Length: 119
Length: 314
Image 1 (tube, chains in turn yellow, orange):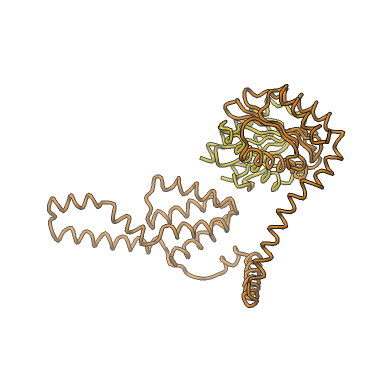
Image 2 (cartoon, rainbow over the protein chains, first blue to last red):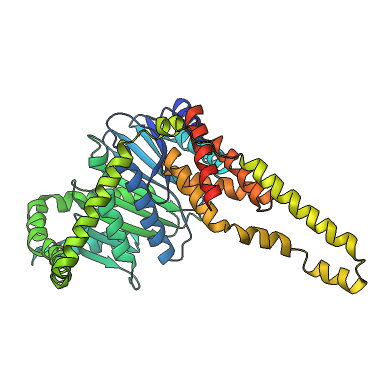
């Protein structure tokens, strides 16, 4: 099963032009990851789960439901965090010149696959 | 006019122009000044924690240099925008209504240009005001810990140290031990659990058949029996303490597959016992389903062996 998650992440990277991806449990532990050497897996995982959860709290405080997606733009690229039901978070690292529309579409496809796998 | 009022003036302008719900200036994740609508019981602390954690991205990914953060809700009527003026100073914005990323970015960029010249003053303010608050809470916690430690009696302390030392030694031993090879080289003959359980169940069935042929039950008895139909299964599951068995299996599984094992175990358990009732046979079958998740053949065998041993002990 873990192998299956790696396959899904690798497929996402191949199809979207992303640099890396990490699947994180809601408690901030990495389930599977394919990340470039400059990224610290544990920190990216913990930070992703934390900011998405805090963002959710801010949103629910205002009775605005759940957060759909959260992305951070840096000088070298993007990091996009998306919640998968209430069980996991998908983090994707992409270079600054990535085609954002295509990337977001591929992320949605990957989310569907992961939702099926995670049950 | 002091710096706080000056910055509040900038924030006010942006707040009114873009009709925002909240706008604030954060230094190292601590709110310095903010302007908002309505009440903010937990909103501001959560938002500031979120900004504080997001600053870690620059350490988590080399040369990332975060510029902004954007998020919107599923109903597309609320958005969060954080603009990083420097690596530790950020403007945080919350907007209700249809998200307008471009507008938020323009507003924040203009604001950042106005605030940027005060960067060094803002750092000084953090050191003087905001950091003090942060550290005083840390000091309080430290004092509480110190007091707690002082009240502990000396012998108790020694005992605790000895216990911890023993724990560390045990942990070191466990970590350095080659679980696979140790288990494989042990020549302990474990009785086949399938056979043991099979015999046990066959015996029970024989006993039940015997009871049935002895007397012809009355209609009342048959009806009463139907009402308590679930009982034998319950009794059996109670006999071998299901919770304890699952807990033990989970611990062993996590040992072989890592922390993710806990999550996988629960998922597999839910799937498996959707179609199977809980009894000794199904639990044993379930352990084989779990074993399929372990990639290495040797590890898989060792896992099954350990499960068998632990089930026999329960």
